[in-house]
Length: 339
Image (cartoon, rainbow, N blue to C red):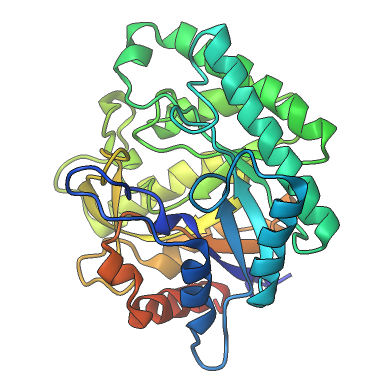
C-alpha cells in the first residue's frame, strides 16, 4: 500500500494551544473559523480530507450533552470533513491532572480518558468519525519532579497509562501517547521508549509520532545522557541519529503528525519550553519534511494508520488566519504522501 492512500487531516488545536487571556496571549480561534480556514485550503485541486480534534474549551465543553456533541459532529461534517484522532483533555486546568500525581490526580486523568471515549462513541455512531486514536501524554509539565526519583515517576505514569488503556479498550479505542521534551517521563526518546515498553502488554496502547517535536530529542535537550548528536554534527550524522531514534519508536507508532521546526526550544503561554514550530515553508525550518516523514511512515499500513495530520502550534493569530499558511501546509502534506 502506498503513502498516497493516507488521508490528510488538519489539527484544530493550533487555534487553542498557547492562546488565552493572560499577558502577551492572543485569544483562541473558534472551531468554526479553524474549520473554515482548513476548508478553504486547496493545492492543485487537492483539499484536506478531515480534522483531528482537541476535546476542551472553547471548542468542546466537557459538560456538553450528547445532543450538543452531535451538533459539533454535524458542524464538522458540514464542512466536508471526517473526524480522526481525538486529544483527551488530560492536563491540569482541563478535565485531567498529572499522570504522575496522587490518587486524586490520577482519577482526574482517567476521567479525562473516559470523557474522550464518550465523545469518540458519539462521533463514531454519528458516522463522522471513521478512525483515529485518542491521544494523551503524561500531563506532568517540566522534568524536575520526575528527576527527583525517575524510577518511581516512570512507574506511576505507567500505572496511569495502563489503567487508561483498559478504559479505552472497553470502548473499542486505541490510545497513543505523545512524547515531547516538556512532559516529564517523556522528555527524551529513551524515556518515551521506557514508558512504552512498561505498558507493552496493553495492546491498544501505542505511540503518536510528532516528528517536529522530536527534533530536539536526538540533541538530548532535558536529557543530555540520551543525546545522539553533539555540536558540529553534519547532515549525514543528523539523519543517522534521526533514523536510529525512529527505528526505536516507529514500531510503536499508530498516529502521525507532521510539522516544521526551527531548532529552537520555546513555546507560548502555558505551553512553553517545547520544540518551536514554524510555518511549513519557513526558510528557517530545519527539517526536510518529506524525508523525515518517510522514517516514521515506513510500513504504516502494518500499524493500522489511515491518515496523517498537520500539528504546527503556537503561531500568531495573524499567521493562522492567513490563507497562504494553510496552502503551504497542505502542499507539504501532499508532498509527504506523494513520495
